[in-house]
Length: 475
Ligand SMILES: *[C@@H]1O[C@H](CO)[C@@H](O)[C@H](O)[C@H]1NC(C)=O
Ligand SMILES: *[C@@H]1O[C@H](CO)[C@@H](O)[C@H](O)[C@H]1NC(C)=O
Ligand SMILES: *[C@@H]1O[C@H](CO)[C@@H](O)[C@H](O)[C@H]1NC(C)=O
Ligand SMILES: *[C@@H]1O[C@H](CO)[C@@H](O)[C@H](O)[C@H]1NC(C)=O
Ligand SMILES: *[C@@H]1O[C@H](CO)[C@@H](O)[C@H](O)[C@H]1NC(C)=O
Ligand SMILES: *[C@@H]1O[C@H](CO)[C@@H](O)[C@H](O)[C@H]1NC(C)=O
Ligand SMILES: *[C@@H]1O[C@H](CO)[C@@H](O)[C@H](O)[C@H]1NC(C)=O
Ligand SMILES: *[C@@H]1O[C@H](CO)[C@@H](O)[C@H](O)[C@H]1NC(C)=O
Ligand SMILES: *[C@@H]1O[C@H](CO)[C@@H](O)[C@H](O)[C@H]1NC(C)=O
Ligand SMILES: *[C@@H]1O[C@H](CO)[C@@H](O)[C@H](O)[C@H]1NC(C)=O
Ligand SMILES: *[C@@H]1O[C@H](CO)[C@@H](O)[C@H](O)[C@H]1NC(C)=O
Ligand SMILES: *[C@@H]1O[C@H](CO)[C@@H](O)[C@H](O)[C@H]1NC(C)=O
Picture 1 (cartoon, rainbow, N blue to C red):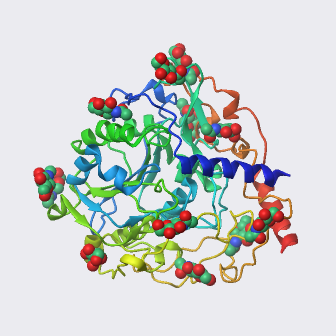
Picture 2: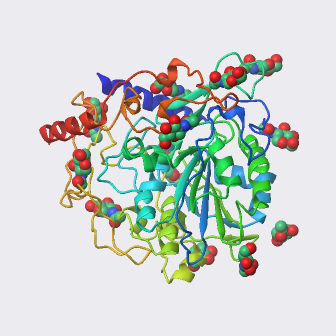
Picture 3: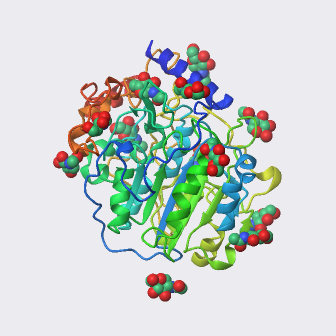
């Protein structure tokens, strides 16, 4: 029943990712007067500025800004002048790999150190006993936020958001600019139940406010909208966005100072038939000057962006990809500065990470497991510390002990898959009261029915209870 729907959706999204659907043929249109300015095109008004604690000094940098573009083979970015220009400002990593396909599991991996078997872009959520990088950062008092272009309001939890098409002037239908699958701050159950967490799931009008008020946090994730990130457009379009957005911000000391590291990367490559190498540049005033306009061929993955952060601030770890030797290599100069030993992989030793949907895990309908604990919670990570463990974690359930079941064959659906795509409206603490605010007028904006703003569908706590009991029956 339900499972067939999600299977079909999975196939559709896989096909479009493989064939590289490029819907928008128009040339780049600036969505705002400037990268640090609010825009009515973003609909949602800014909801205050972030309140962060004192700056926690890092061993190599005090701020890291992750910027993710979409679905591009290494060569396709490397041969474009816009990206060559960016590379000249920093160090080009030419052996940097995404961890799987399609998009969502990569965004998940960037914040959770695992993708829990996920091989699609559906509406999944991660329960409270499973740590994220955000928990690790909180534990070290390092402030963080995601900034999502065209997300209508702070703490938004819906599957996507559509609004009038600002790119094609003759378009008649609303366009989907924001998608949850590209937002690492939206995957945890806590994103909808903890106001302190939800306030850090922010939009680009919030970015403008935080930038101008000097309240940007120490760890940031930037998700451009579906055309600006190349997903629905072309790499040339995203190159023009990068020119327009990133280059001026490099000269803005409220964004980039001499302790700022910027990581421009891609979620995954485009061609599933090749290994998953992605164009990645580290730049910013916090990059050692001698590395500017150089290439580093050390093997890195999305897990490196976690272990590098752990090493920099001496943080606890997640006990997942962030402690997996080789895949967790720390950016070379940070490894040197923190005494971390990398295991460089070259040639045939580089694992294939172009594998999709074949892994056991709670998010694989065909090989579903319970949410598992890290293999070893005593393992010391790049920060020189052990695993951060949250309440409610059963350490006896690990990837080695879980027994997968085929939920597809059983015609049932994981309790962690909100196939209605709308559980979030049942969450009481959504910041901004689940109302989009019109950035121009300050009054409530009208949302299309697609946004599900008025429907209450699934209650999370009920899901959790159902989850535990139905899984118990299955196992
Ligand atoms: C990118 O910018 C260049 C230079 O302005 C322009 O010639 C080109 O058409 C633009 N391409 C896209 C896809 O926006
Ligand atoms: C980067 O290096 C190349 C050649 O190695 C040089 O032509 C170019 O001017 C350099 N760019 C910058 C911004 O230093
Ligand atoms: C808009 O008009 C141009 C030029 O006629 C056409 O190529 C394009 O397909 C139109 N776009 C839409 C979304 O209708
Ligand atoms: C970094 O910037 C700070 C503040 O502007 C300044 O005091 C310091 O001297 C700079 N350090 C270096 C190495 O440039
Ligand atoms: C992954 O990439 C390798 C090397 O290019 C290729 O041989 C293999 O067929 C690809 N795997 C899949 C599942 O496409
Ligand atoms: C990793 O291996 C590549 C390829 O041999 C090499 O270019 C790079 O310098 C190595 N990195 C380190 C840190 O040894
Ligand atoms: C984590 O919590 C979920 C939801 O309550 C539960 O199904 C799962 O078994 C727990 N996993 C571990 C390792 O504690
Ligand atoms: C944990 O153990 C499983 C096998 O039981 C292995 O596949 C996985 O790579 C291990 N994870 C880490 C982070 O070492
Ligand atoms: C799970 O069940 C489905 C439907 O019966 C089947 O197509 C699929 O091959 C099974 N997968 C595994 C890993 O057993
Ligand atoms: C947006 O969400 C709706 C409701 O879940 C879904 O039907 C639609 O396919 C989604 N569109 C995109 C482009 O993600
Ligand atoms: C901002 O968030 C608070 C909750 O933190 C909420 O009460 C308020 O309505 C929001 N304001 C706007 C303009 O969305
Ligand atoms: C916001 O207000 C402006 C001016 O009244 C209006 O044109 C626009 O459609 C509104 N946007 C939304 C999403 O309601």
